[in-house]
Length: 233
Image (cartoon, rainbow, N blue to C red; front, side, top):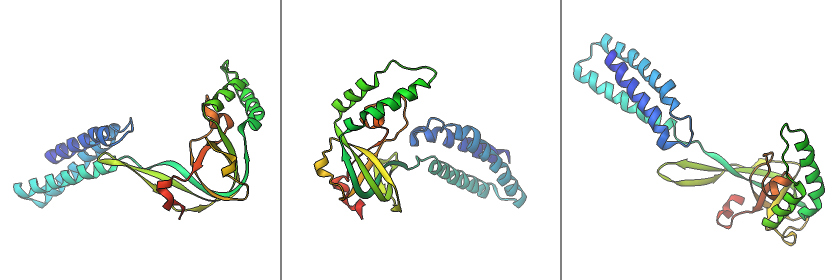
C-alpha cells in the first residue's frame, strides 16, 4: 500500500507541477500537482494498494499494474493541463446601417471619459480631447453601425507541439445595432444597406483607454480575412 501511494503520489505531483510549466501558459498551473494530483495520486495509491494486497497479486503482476496505472495517470494529468482554447475574435454578419467619421463622435466620447474620471478616486491629468485626436492621427478609421443578424466565435486551439490553429464555431442568431471602429477604413467601402461580415477583435471598458476604438468605447472590426473566406459559410 505504501509503495503504491508513494509512486502514484510522486508521479501525480511531478506531472501536475512540472507539466503545466511546459504545456500551459497559466501562472497557477504548478498548484495542480501540489494540491490536486499529488494528494489525489497518493490517495488512489492507498486504495489500489489495498486492492492489490487483498487479491494477493504476485510481485511481478503487482509491479506491472503499478507502472501501468502510473503511466495512465501521468498521461491523463498532462492531457488535463493542456491550454484551453480561447476566443480571439468574433464574426458578425448584418446590414450596414451607417458609416461615420470618428470626429463626429468626439464630443460625446470626451465628455464620457471626463465624467468617468471625475468619479475615480485618483483622477489623471489626461486631456481627453488631445488624447482622442492623437489616437485618430495614429490610427485613422471610421465608425460603422451594423444591424447584426448572426455571429460566431473564432477560437484559437493551442498546444506546445504545433502552431496555434484558428477555428470558427457555429453561427448563432444576433440582434440589435452594434458600433465598431474600422481602422484604416473608408466609408466608400461600407454603403448603408449592404450586407457585410466583420472580423471583430478587442474589447471595451479598459482603463486607461488606449487607441481610437477604446476611446470611442467600441470594438475594432475589419473585413473578413481573405485566407479565411470559408468562415462566411
